[in-house]
Length: 605
Image 1 (cartoon, rainbow, N blue to C red):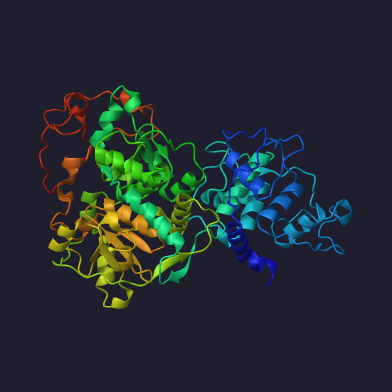
Image 2 (image 1 turned 180 degrees about the vertical axis):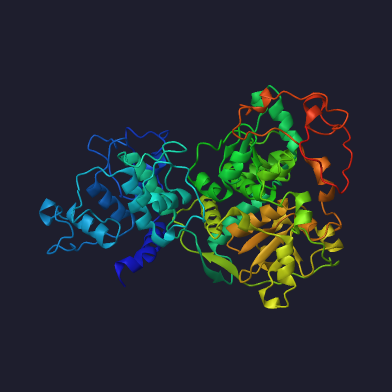
């Protein structure tokens, strides 16, 4: 095999060997006097130092702010991708006229030759300029070449937001940013020609290692592997906590008051373009597909000591992020559960999601894709009215479970997040994590049973028995990671559609099953989207006035609020809008009238 063809295999072999020898991805054994544990690149620098990809100076420093030369980076990227061999390459026919064996063997000559042979570096008119500092844009180019097929392609129309990237590097910078490998200097600037520092290089190479086939699904096994079981056990413990939704008025009540101490942190998981159209004042935007990498990177925007509320499109998508955040932040789910059961203070702050997402926060139609606000979806044909069946469908032990490639870490939460990242990597956009009820109906009614997905109702057993989508088996959402009793019924050889009441617990179940390696999507609006008369459907037909509000959003206008505590309640609305935002701030809502079938008018409040 050519070495270029062995890239993915060699990475897996190295990671597997590290596990056998008891060497972790980030042992933190190497210490530098100028890189304390509080340094933003501490984890990345110590990780690469432990792997002997980078080193420090004789005085015990690392000098994270110093520049990196091109020949230094050639060595780093060759070591990181396991391209280095003892044999000296091209000694009689050097690739570059300014990099010769006499400069030093193996460094820098052999490392530069190996980087060139791999296609990582190109040079300029036959020269490599080895002593020049590598720039940020050159670093991005080499990193993306080294990542190869291990990096996911960004979806069509993906925008980095950077306005200063040269045309020749637009695609590479976009790919590196989409894969969580690089950041800009600001939201709109990349600063492409600035020197890349030793700290920045460590971060980008560390992120590259995260993409190298870690924990990918590689087949199935008759019995759950140790990795599968460990991840399932952790998911099972977090699912047992039951963290799900909170109503928008509850969130607003906390944000409207003048007490910042009780404010939750609002994480908005919609796409940046939709976030810009309108978001809860003070919210931070991390799109859903980027959440696993943000958690793997310990993104400082995500607090560890504050309650989090997730604002999403419809809530079910937010519940996917909700499970990930709770999985990451709740280090001891058993202790959390014991406190919940005893009704005492919990050791970890929780994350919840706004019920029905931004559709329930504001009546603005353009905060979600066209036709997918619930009342609009009726007219758009997203909602269907299809038969239900009563009784139960017996689950069949599939005798097969997804198997994963080596993870390169012993940390079970890291394994779960790597699996979440890989699951999301199979989608072009976050909207593909769901299926519309109309699309499911078309699939089931096309006359070809061979292409039917496995249907998994994650509703309560009593509601499932009263009426479910024909053919669906029942696994309550908190049990989807209970391997011995329930997960065994899930078929790893078929696409899976999970559904619940209004979409939320379906989103949680979908995320858990996706982490476990199943090809799964969630049914938008749950059983409400299939048949709005289903027993225990969650009653989204009364959704608008019972659960939805017209709270303020920031959209970049002059009237944007620094926080909702600055909101001035309008007056004079009470006669017509007794249950809407106009009087919420003054006296909240008492006994709201159940809505009829008609959607609300535009511009309430």
